[in-house]
Image (cartoon, rainbow, N blue to C red; front, side, top):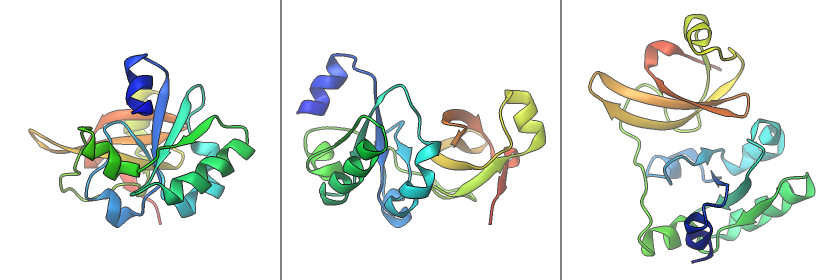
Length: 160
């Protein structure tokens, strides 16, 4: 209920889903930053700043340790008790990825043309959300601590 209170207060929070890719494919909180737990130590410099991180996993055990790790490295981070299971049980909604050539949290980069069109970097990025659009899958990616939305497969290049 605390997270719901924070949302109602319009508190600036970003959900951080640290579940594994196969778990992310079952759904995640809309707008969540997706970063599997094993990627957090090396990837924490890619996380957004300027908001409190609400870290979640399936039931709350993994997120507790990750939130502690992030706090030790200067982030304001909290573990969501009960994880996404609790979120859904309390009426929270989730986004379920819909097909496409990429999967949640996959490492990609923007094509040069897309980066130029969006005034964004061609540096490493990761898939954050996949929704079905009229013409096919529409992607949101995280690049340079920022979320870029409205991308198509033609805007993205898979990284090894």
